[in-house]
Length: 77
Image 1 (cartoon, one colour):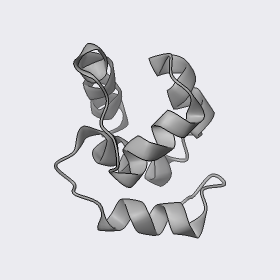
Image 2 (image 1 turned 90 degrees about the vertical axis):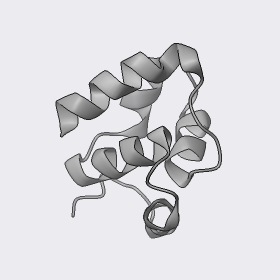
Image 3 (image 1 turned 180 degrees about the vertical axis):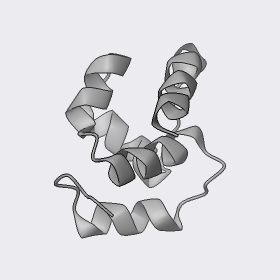
């Protein structure tokens, strides 16, 4: 698995998080495909910290970003 600079701690949090959450699913694919958090943040118009919280399952993207993220997930799948 490529990590593109992702810390082992973030990867571990992502693997333990609820896979039903949109942000967690996005995180797993980004980690697997080596997509930098900065790219995701820019595409979604949020901060890198926000993306990290999604990947860890702490927060979830708002409804206004659901379509963008689902498209991103589909492209990476």
